[in-house]
Image 1 (spheres, one colour):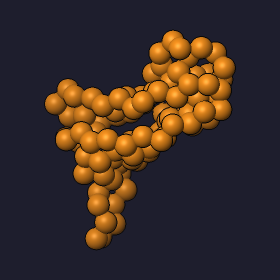
Image 2 (tube, one colour):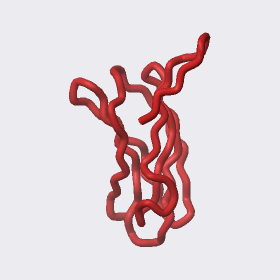
Image 3 (cartoon, helix red, strand yellow):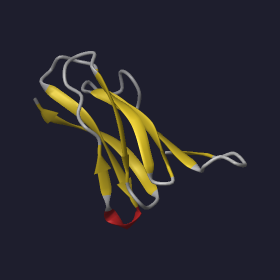
Length: 95
């Protein structure tokens, strides 16, 4: 995760799970600003695996995005989780 901050702007952590082509299931990207989570998860292959993003936070908690299903599909997501984000990973379910 990268830190992005400017005077007068919320402190945000930007995340990506490797970008297109880094994993066969897909990829995800977005940011966390003061607990507010926004992003997109992309399914890049018709393989029966639907990717989703899992963001880990200090204190042991995590947040999961909805999953994207179907090659070429992308799902925007938003949510909230208190605490400092520490990492983001791409995972998948069989669908």
